[in-house]
Length: 148
Image 1 (cartoon, rainbow, N blue to C red):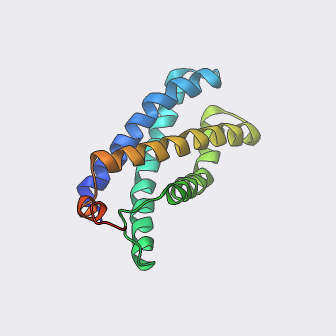
Image 2: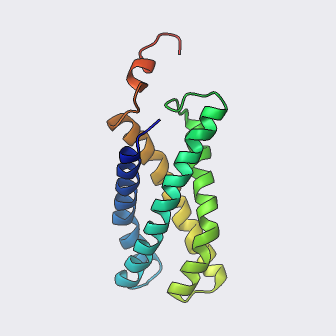
């Protein structure tokens, strides 16, 4: 499994790259001032970093309980991972988005669904790249074993 320091690096870089792309994008799409969208993004980012750490730790422990190697993540598993994270996180963020941006609940759901779609795509690509740049301990040796 990953170390705590690695999980913190993973989470911080994920949020940083996500905000760098999503704040200007959603500010433009929602016709909302960038400073208001930026403050919302920072607040959601802090919530997401805590949830990301706990969710990924729980996901890895689930894999261990299922007797699956934590460093083997086929595309279907990466999709399940991203969808599960976003759905669970949306339950918290929809009311925050509606309140902060003074939107109806319907518009907040639409915006949060757009953010979730963006972040699911970001999560899939980011985690794939992250695992290549910072492989898990034992992943290199395990990947070189024929037949696995």
